[in-house]
Image 1 (cartoon, rainbow, N blue to C red):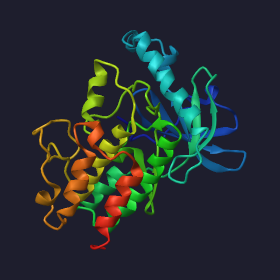
Image 2: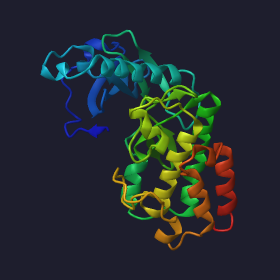
Image 3: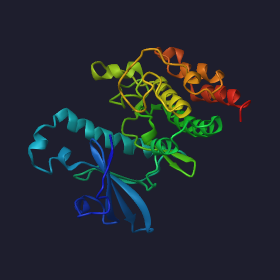
Length: 296
């Protein structure tokens, strides 16, 4: 979970010694479980960038009692997150995926440098609208996300953490961010977000679960359901991990303006059995587009 800081305009030079002098750090923007994000200027071309850097406690720089609670496995995973994000993004060139500008994984505090995007997440947009998204709005979102996820899958990876808070929306153009959990297909996953994780992914806390595109299909199904109904399918409450039912309510029952033809599409995305879900993003967007044509 990322928290956005009230004192984001205050910066006391806490990471200056760990990042290249090329970057002039301006403000600390947010803090997550293993890293934090700063706004900076790339003095090479005077452009804004975002610097994602490992939290100092994972490198043993801040010596306090909090560090004693961090296990060697947690430290290993924190380094793994930022390393795999850098290595994966280094190979990516897609308009809906955050652009990696630079990185230094050998620094005492490893960091990556990304394009700076104003923090207008799809989650904020959902809350701001306070209403269901139209079929056309949803289709516009689906086209971009399917294209990005299809690109990730074609490269042999699974995103593993699709949720509204990991999608930046700038004038209807969407960008996937935070690739710390991306995994090669058929390699064990290392996490996810409750509420968007497929049933089989939830088992990863006790047993290894292999990454497959079906995990991303499920998460996308939850997101689509949320856009079209304002709720999550098993809870009928926004962004909650509490499960009120094991049977999803039909989206058209929650949104009387939604044609019933979309119910089967949404339900197929969130089938409990991964084999029963859409086998590719192409098939999903094909079915949704075909259904939408009569209503936009």
